[in-house]
Length: 197
Image 1: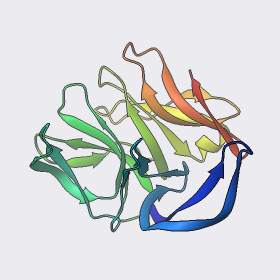
Image 2: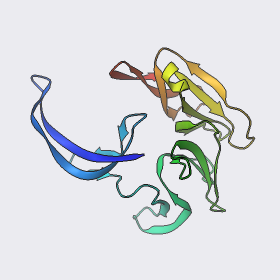
Image 3: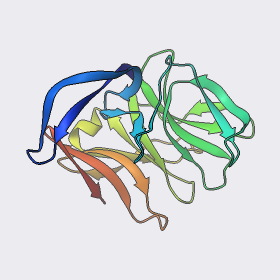
């Protein structure tokens, strides 16, 4: 993850274009340069939620339904793309490796508090766990540039297997509850689209 300035600009819906100059809103917002996603969201009431702060200094924290913190899990790090396993015992996430600086797919054992990297590529990102908890699908560079997504079992440490290859780069975002479909974002040139496979 990197950090950048979040800016806002007036949009004219009748002309479908921006108007005027952009205005800085927040000075320090996380974003993923590979997938082009910034870590923020705006509600219908105008409230802005965002992920900021220093890299490698985030913590996984349990909260109850009232928002009170219950405890922390695992070591601090630079996280994104969190997916809780169906049994609630593990979290699959994207984490920048503090030693090499590249993101990889990690699993955090919420019972023991330990974490380990489950992929071995130089840059692995956008992980999504299967409904049965047995597989993780993710994008991997430079294969993602050729529209390739990979799948790997978190527990066996075996080599990842190709899942999808197309003319569009695939960033997985969701796995259907029946295990048959994966939704992903595909980029064609400067544009983007959401696809299901």
